[in-house]
Length: 251
Image (cartoon, rainbow, N blue to C red; front, side, top):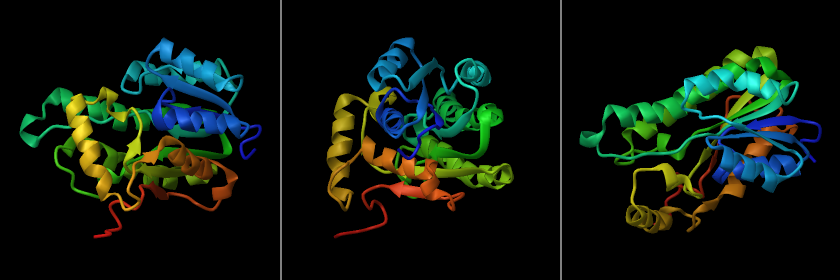
């Protein structure tokens, strides 16, 4: 029970990596507050996780929702010990087809959402708290059609170190987890067709040295490590959960 007595916030906690992390946090003894964009998905996930879970309907891309987050959390708990800033998704387009709506949607959710989530929950965090951000391996490679998504995730990667430098004096640790190709519903909000998603996953899997996509629970284990006291001397670090891609070439 690594998180016994802790209170955790997981944004984007109704599916994929966020949901797996919320479940693991609960299994490890934490009371978990999870956010999601719709009441239906939030209530369903809270019911699945059980008695240790609470839910808030909040859109990480909405400034109105972000500015209400501290108040809504305070209505349910007195403080926070752990925060996993996870809410996000990806959209892809060739450079010549990128428009302002595409740009704004990605940066609103991934960059503005991350920045103001941390800002708003900061007063609720006690000393010895931990914040974990969700970055991506796209910051390490040049991937076609992902200019905006990669740039937004690079901003989150930068936040890992700048937030860590600023908050360490408050005895709050900031780190990040960097997922590689993970089998989730990640593409549900993307602009790719079902055929495009299938083609992408079929072509990408052989490039991963471990020869498969990762599972959400495998990323959740890395988040648990960074959130718990097991990583008490780790600050401003990004842990890759990527099956060896793109660092290892097997052929």
